[in-house]
Image 1 (cartoon, rainbow, N blue to C red):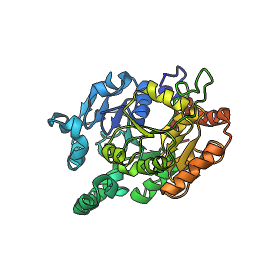
Image 2: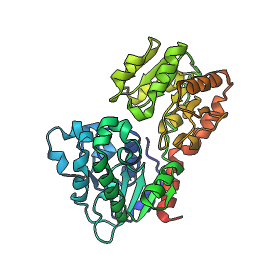
Image 3: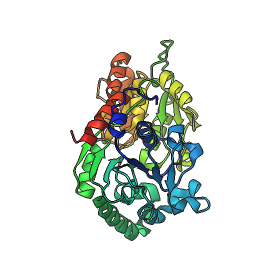
Image 4: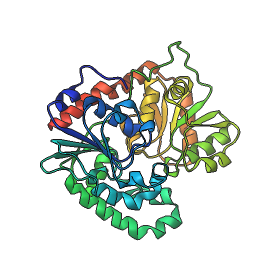
Length: 372
């Protein structure tokens, strides 16, 4: 994402001592794209995190003082940090946060449990309360491990809720997450939608609309429900390209017919070209928000999405995409057929995505921090 010289968030933060917080720095996903904007707005702010792999994040993130927890010194932690959930609560609560006026965290796990210094205001931009504790333990752990871990997960939920007391204000990434914050934590929050980089995500410059394959861009983990699409497209025979890696890769490939192509990890430029030349994007999981549909829409492409969760706040049924109401192969297949038969207006789809641009995000985040 490019820097905006007229950045209202940078103006707001410039007169304050700011420290940023983030769960971990191990790659550039949606959360790190938001963190990157905070780093650009507060270029001298230190950053507190559990573990850091500087080579895996962008220059605006790695170019500052990064303060890590004791987990940083555990051999193999950078690669295997997700298996170290029992250590994260202790690591978060024992990591030093420098003196500041504003401690601004981006959080989907434990960053809200970092200890703010006395007198600092702590604001949590919450991607979601931790999914494995509150939402999808069976999907993350499997039914047997989830049952064994049930007492620990019950303790973790109590710990998680207790440590929200450190947060002065929550800002949610969607109304869907806002409801979770209220239901799980008993806290109110405002909503600021994360941005899509509409300067980078644009329709094909040559006007080629493509359309000879459909596309998934996702982590290949169970709760994303990529299996629904693999089964549906294996049955219909229409080409489907799947970008992403994850613990479910082997299982999904075993389900797939030859028309389903797994591309693994691809860089941003490759993904952009795939967006530009696909027929449509398929988004079968229940997501907190989902930046991928907005990236596809910014390229003028319609989205077929499960009609629950964050996608209902970004996709307009019949105008920028199609919803399906049940997570079944048949329901997804029927929605894809409807989308394929529809005459889509690529310019209108693009115009809708522009409502979620970086400048809009910077203005909305500034207003939220001001309490407006």
